Length: 482
Ligand code: F6P
Image (cartoon, rainbow, N blue to C red; front, side, top):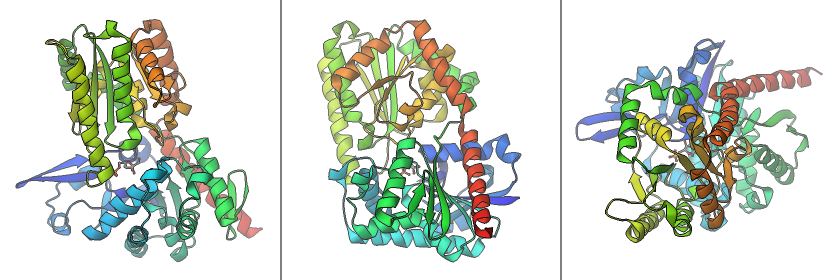
């Protein structure tokens, strides 16, 4: 029996203030939906976890929390452990080192990377605040599971003070090749890897990311490894792959909800006689939104027979809007949408329907179900759960997924039409092929992908990771008694 302590940069909910009105919204991103789905599942209820604790930075004030202005926290079925961080410090840690240094570098955008020592100092400080908050309440049997690139120093900080602790770490973004990773200043890259090596198990989405990590550990820290087992400072650390899954039933059953059915009927009525191409992404330069629009424009030019007969619904979710690389992107995307619509629209047809907002779940589900094609073409993506959610949502297995070969999900969803996101001809050909694909072929492809997603859903992902973490502890104990 153990407590499971999830640690991520964000808590799984955000608090919106509108005058006196306070509302709670689920945070965006795959990490939050994955862990939340697990927490709500029977598997979690039937497991030997006695208590679930989720620790993360609060986006609300300490006063709001203490006075319970943040309502109904208990409905989340876990104990929230918020950390309150000074705004200026958080900015250098989150906008700075996390999202202007690590994020672009790990997604292969070296020209966007900013190198500032005060960013790294803030990153270290916030990681140590997490450690200081956790250590006083830590119990010997606790299982600690740290998530993502914002907290890469934390496992090492905890290990230094709690040598026997059980610590897992999962990276939700790509781990880049050593040639990219090595461009970081020596001190930073050593500290980041030493931090990760404080964990007992370090998990990644794909085989390539594991390989890249193990190579970096060998080159930078000189640690010996045999395959995915690394010996570091007389301790065994394992690196392994755990491709994150989705809450399959949540998406496949969504069509039973009356509201989803109504919304879907409305979409079908409004776009009768037209095919729908759908995409939804956070506003991020890694998502390839500009290339996607250029690909769609190229398609309309190459295939005038589809004009008036297809709409591209482009849904962009606000994200990291204090960072200049993101706001600049928003402007250029909106200009491109206007220029395509200005060029091709008629009195009865607008080719791109663009929205910039958080989509409520029922609407997202209705749109997934209505889409003839999902066009998901990131320039780089750790996994991409939208692709998996679309596959799970299709009605009668009708629909075609066009997916970037540079998304982690491409290594599992081989029956999608895989494209190079920067190759306009490739994207345009795939759109034409998807729109004309015979229904039996759509079904055949979907059935194979769905089977894989059912077999390895989010519950399997969590269970596999936690089982493997406990196996590493057993192996370590055996090594020590030898
Ligand atoms: O998947 C990568 C990730 O950064 C997650 O850690 C996070 O939940 C998601 O993307 C959304 O990012 P942010 O929390 O910066 O809005």
